[in-house]
Image (cartoon, rainbow, N blue to C red):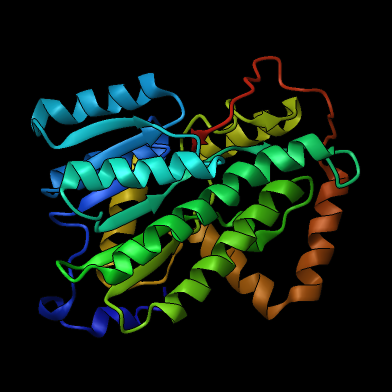
Length: 303
């Protein structure tokens, strides 16, 4: 994040994203699909896991056009520990050994309501996927990555700038993403000198379907989609940037300039930052109705 890792000579950096045996959750669309396509383009094999098996199959079909025999689909609800354990067993059988790169990407969007109005059902739903999905992936795959010595190994956890921005009306989403950041920081320390790299991705707006496929109120959906059009990166840009950063040994990846601005404002002027957020929240239009085209899903790709 701060550029120090660029001082390390390229020749001595483990290129974990090249020739990887990768598992990507939420690979049926958005950032997850972009990760899977890019890993295949870098000479790797990839398990495309998604709760929507048809979407996972679509990703595999895209990969197979250019790289036959390198991709496999697997249905997985990351909120269910048993599904993730089955995913690990499937990957080991396909790769004839443990995965070398795990990308915990599956996530859902939720927002538009204040604490006290969110409801426990939505809290459980959001944390089950956005937090427990990552915990399941890390807890299941980390022992395998740590024990393997065959090749460079790594974990990429997809969080969000929301994890440190703490914008109002996004408490369930913010909480999960902040926890994913903390989990990743802890793992980076624990796995130091083991050969397993850890990277946490914290983008702002990415051009995916997360706003439409989540549980987001109508006004919040319209605002998010507007900001995606104005400032959003494409999933391909985010995936390539993140994989390159992971190869450099970078812990934090903030691919957009606005994430860097928020990061610094929050840390240098914490009280003023929170005050401004509160003022903006009062100025923005409020809407507690669900989006007319809202789709209730249990797992999608996006941040």
